[in-house]
Image (tube, rainbow, N blue to C red; front, side):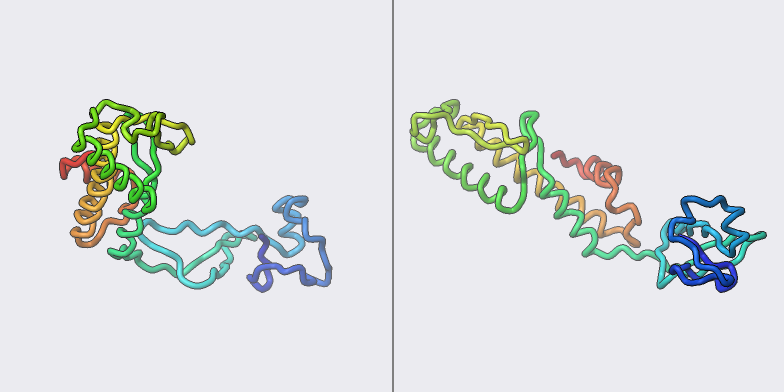
Length: 206
């Protein structure tokens, strides 16, 4: 990206000071060569913490032939909807059960809930909670993990699996609520540290 020194506009390949140049001069020429031809590489604008840029950049002359990029900025305001979106993302990112990562999208959670109900009914019907073939199919019941591995689960394990999935979702709902209750909502609302600290403070585990 080059700025034309005479106009302080981005160069779009137009003739500058009576000469037309190839598009790759930014990579081939030194800063001094660019300056002598009427160009400069602008210094990238650094957005201050807690701010966001508004509109398009402007370019201002600095010392000598230097050019700096400038934006108007405004305060970043975190809304409850932004926290809810982060909550949902974290809920659907998966959870660890017995050292294995499992998917936890809405459809996954519905499937886990259904399996838990079936396992409970099997136990209530007299099936040993440690039985792997609790469905009576002649094969162990298995669940597909996030890494596509198949993991056998007894009826009792499936019940625990369902409880873990529920706790995973519930913990993130509680944490999101605690973050939204702060005024203003902190700018680092999406950081891992923020969510981990909130879970410790609330005494919840995932």
